Image 1 (spheres, rainbow over the protein chains, first blue to last red):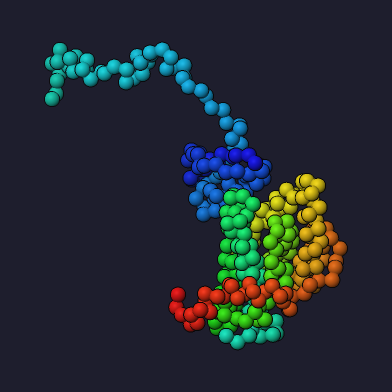
Image 2 (image 1 turned 90 degrees about the vertical axis):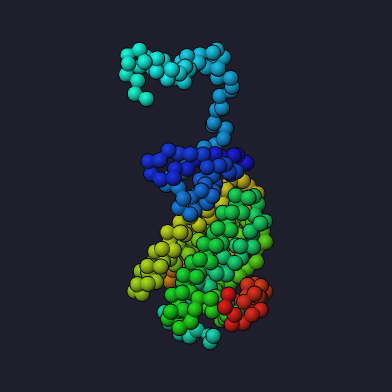
Length: 95
Length: 222
């Protein structure tokens, strides 16, 4: 029996989020069980069922982590100190 | 309470489908915890609960006509006073016969619900429309299992044998004028029906268990 991943949308327009997984022999059963397990109480506006084998997991390490490129990130260095120094030089320090 | 009128009163019209739904729901609930796999356990238990919910709504309608309550109708009558068809009483401890009954019942029930939706009794027609919306899921479930069992040679042989065995019982679910449509949708010729009105030996033990708690404290407020 195949494993199917279920994604549910809480309300129309909201992003789909992973709800859980279920076992079913084929797509027809997967659809029926998804309704049963994730839609019976009207808790989902829409459901996706995806065969687990269709999901591709990307192996770590991700390329970004191989080299140190912290400078690419906005949190790579602090602007706060530089900003304070600049304000002092300009005589516009407010606090 | 006293037996419902033998004449085909409005309440009596409702009691036949109500009793069918209650007893079938009870039989289906026997699979809770022992269905072939967990997802199916949840799904089939939910269908059983759905049928009992429909029974409750129908009993409430009948109870208002008869001046009683849904609980009294469901659980305080003697076994002979139930109006259910023999099909739903059968104890079927194998999956292919359970699915065959489920599939036959849903096909017959769809025809009956269509007829009830046209009832001049507005409350009944409205309730039938509401029940119909939930039965869509039951039908989908029954059809997918019928397809699944028919997909292999062994499954097909066992499923068709079960349908053959239960077919005369299924015809007994419907009033005579509606039976032709059931023959069409099931794809089987008319046969001598096992009629509603008498009960199988399997109803009494079911009833004993179903009413056991209520009978243990007659008249109690729960």
